[in-house]
Picture 1 (tube, rainbow, N blue to C red):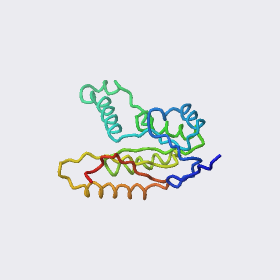
Picture 2: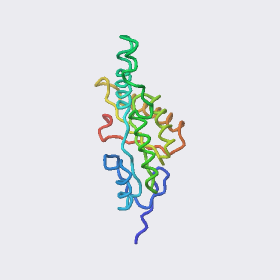
Picture 3: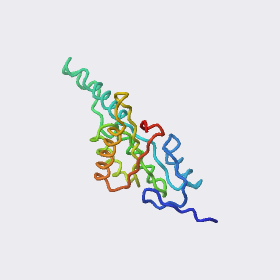
Length: 180
């Protein structure tokens, strides 16, 4: 049999088959089947900053909407542990995914603000993920935004993330990323 070993992101792989981020690659039992079928690595489903922000905003609104009405209504919704929020649930599931297989698991992150990129890159690293894929996507605010501005900002973000974590970092771009 041919030797198909390769390296991706500095990770030694038994072959070049990497399962991309999708709903198929989230449950530990499915990940084990993917590994048994011959995949050499898995990119775990992305977490998006807008998911994090929306859930945190909705939860805050639900927990505080009655605080100004009557003192006894403050406890209408009990305070929830931070671990039950979407981002923490995602991180918990990522950790379980990593523990369920012996092949590399690469996390995927899509954010907007540098602070979020860095914060969640560190949290992802703490799960034991073998690498991190930065899912860069940006809608230009103006039609004539120079592509260099977009690309330079995201290069700066990449450098900040790489300086914040020790795991390998890759970048994923769509085919229509900028005008050039």
